Amino acid sequence: MKLTLEKVWVDDLVWGERTMMSGSTLTMNKDEIIEIIKEDERMDKVHLDIVKPGESVRIFSVRDVVEPRVKTTGTGEIFPGMIGSNNQVGEGVTKVFKGTAVVTVGKIDGVKEGIIDMSGPGAAYTPFSRTNNLVLDCEPISGLGTHQYEEALRLAGFKIARYIGVKSEKAKTQEKVVYETLPLEQQQQKHPGLPKVGYVYMLQSQGLRHDTYVYGDDAKEITPTMIYPTEVMDGAIVSSNCVIANDKNTTYHHLNNPIIEDLFERHGKELNFCGVIITNQNVTLKDKERASTYTAELAEKMGLNGVIISKEEYGNTDTDLMMNCRKIEEKGIKTVIITDEYAGRDGTSQSLADADSKADAVISTGNANEVILLPPMDKVIGRIISSVELEGEAENSIKQNRGIEVEIQSITGATNELGFNKMGTR
Image 1: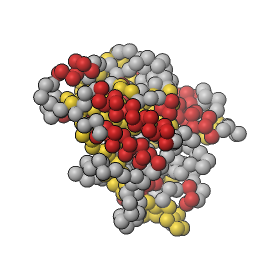
Image 2: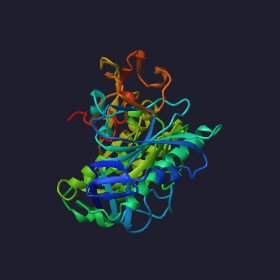
Image 3: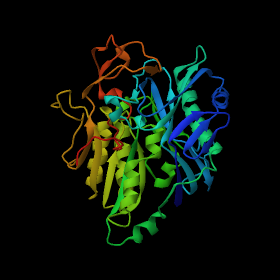
Image 4: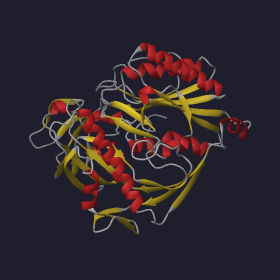
């Protein structure tokens, strides 16, 4: 399966009469965007903001971040099964609008909040301080249930990301990158002498707003399966979770998974990248055992010599991670796992809730308990009532001068476990 990404660089966002690209500037029609969002009758009020790198802006209640993309040739539509047909994607040509993102914001009861600072010390911990962001701050109709509100907000982000892509489809491409994975048997034979490497992609699927969708289906319902890595780049996997901000995979992270991109970069040179195994993160021990067993068996059937394993969130999911690692190692397949740590504010606590002696090649993406003081900002988007809505808040963390003292787990993407950040170990 071959996919060409045509990249268009967006250096600026502005409001205007038409949604279109002109040079490196993306102009957007505010009224059209509001109209599209409010086609969903579950939405009541819509507030739109443009925020840019370096501005004194803090965004609260971040739910998802989505990169605008549009398929120009090939089967299927971007975000299949969510806002279009569920035909297979991952081939043809997809136009990507780099340097910009759609950020959805909404206050959901019982959910810890995520923060994006566009400047100051907090900006260094989130990749979304470096993108030109269209922020959708959407309020639901009175009495709407939490799950329905989350769904409406999630779909709004996908719709506007696709809308931008469709309206800007004729924009001039600055860079083309081609990715290709052959059917498994052909791929196994393609580069004799190079180690056959796969990627075990653990998806958050524990329910209670801890969900990920694959072609429109909740990942909690899947059994481990192999997919083409290019399918991920076309939005086959999207976020629907409200887990802790620092290590959640937003849809933007899935679209730009750096593990997949790095494996492609080394493909045919240092290794033979044979494909991706997606598996879920479960609640019960029985389901964890089943999924990890199937994952290991699939890795063996693919003839892999090594795998990289990533997970999402922490605590309960550490057990899924260790089961996958141990069972794959027992098949004679070398593993490298990627995870963040919750090692306490002084760094001396046990980093993970579970461990195994076979997990002897580990990449850390940072300690989520590190404390940071976020200074006041001139503008705040989103709503927050008290410090208890922040994960890892310090005592009296919301200062009288509007500064906030928190652990970095409150910052969106701070210790992302795909390695989409600036922290880690080598």
